[in-house]
Amino acid sequence: MDGELILVAQEHSCRPFFPHPRPYTLLVVVLVELCLGRWERAKSKMGSAADALLFRQLSVYVATFAFRLLAHLALLLRRPTDLRRRYGAWAVVTGPTSGIGRSMALQLARPGLNIVLVGRDPTKLDDISETISATHGVKTKTVVLDLALVATPEGDDAMRQLREAVAGMNVGVLVNNAGVATPQAVYLHEADVEAWVQMLRVNVWALTEVTAAVLPGMVERGRGAVVNIGSGNGSVDAMPFPLYSVYAPPPNGTNSPYLTFTHRLIGLMAHP
Image (cartoon, rainbow, N blue to C red; front, side, top):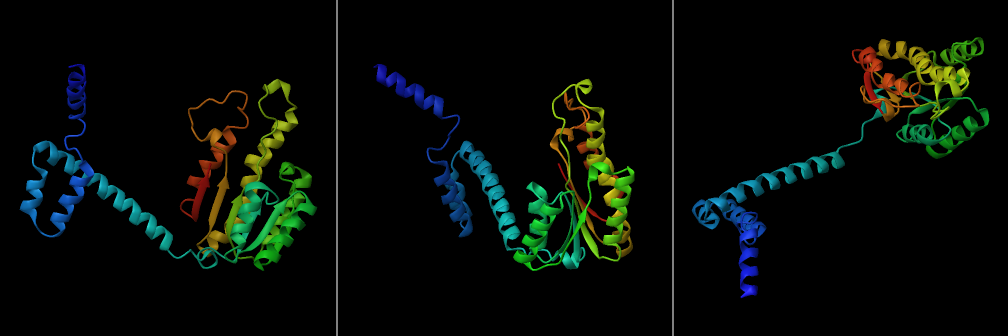
């Protein structure tokens, strides 16, 4: 008796959720009948209104899955973009000696772009330059520039060298990757003010100066792409970020002003 009651309870609890004992089998059978043009037989297979409703729901699911699958297949089969033809022969990458910047430099060189490497450490710049040339056989150029010195006399001289280095080059891609995250989680009064100033110079001011150095050529040629590498910490305008109030706004600024500044001029991708 107890077993019968439990069995009945299980049947009633399952029926509202699964009106057909094998819904996917039903779907396959009905789809086959429809493909063969046998609508009446397909309709009879569905039986009750609950089965018809289930069939419609599963049909939407199958159609959505098929669409996504075809979209992924189309993406995989699509020919890679010829970056040299679309943008230009050269790419400028800041902070290319490690991490994301190094990976970006290597990936841009892979399809044949020549690379201008901008960083503060000559030894590391030479290392990545040799690696790119040996691996992909493209031209490289190094510019020693400490972006923390931008807007200082030493930085002005280095920026002049960068402008001279890219003058006359067909620079089609700029990757503003260099960034500073130190000092980290500290109160404003606990860190040296100069450290905050250097952070702002690298994350905001230098990004603007380097972009201004290569942007006129892009505008003149009518093509180009600027990729700003920022932080997700500042990607939500309304989100407070305690102890990072100086660090968080600049990455958000990286994603926002440049969208409006360059959207009408060149292609732009901003990656938080």
